[in-house]
Length: 190
Image (tube, rainbow, N blue to C red):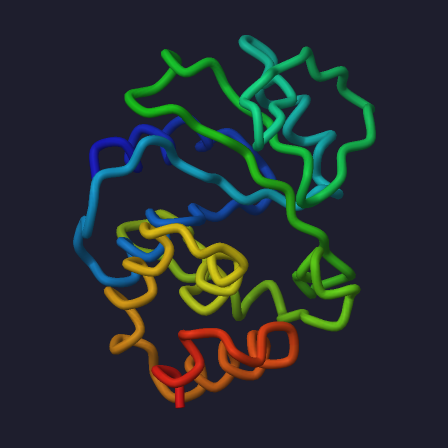
């Protein structure tokens, strides 16, 4: 958890909301490190990019193509889109590389950028904390991971599915099934 503490300290002056996301969020939920991680995903609201620009000036994160890893300079004020656009800090800045994932929001609701605005949840409901570190609720982290059939995403699901309470299981099931009615996880969520 040393890496997460370093990220938390680095974000201490950031005035907006942020969440540890991805596999690390599931580790925080499970209260144990379940596997090795190559980076830390930090979710921030796309509408707060001006706060990111004002807080992280030296070095400023770069825009990274999540498919190729290619980076280009980020110009504050530039419009970035939740989903395809990711911000990356230099890999040697912290003990582990940090990527900023952008989230859509509508008022006090988080909005899943792949759900055409129909999948949403109050920001307060997606926020959990452990030792002062804010992290993404497991059903949200797993919803993101459900799009992939990567081995680590499937392992993450099986590691934490039994820890989900009934409302979290139902929410995840109800938001995977319409898009992927044959998804392998659905049987485990009933």
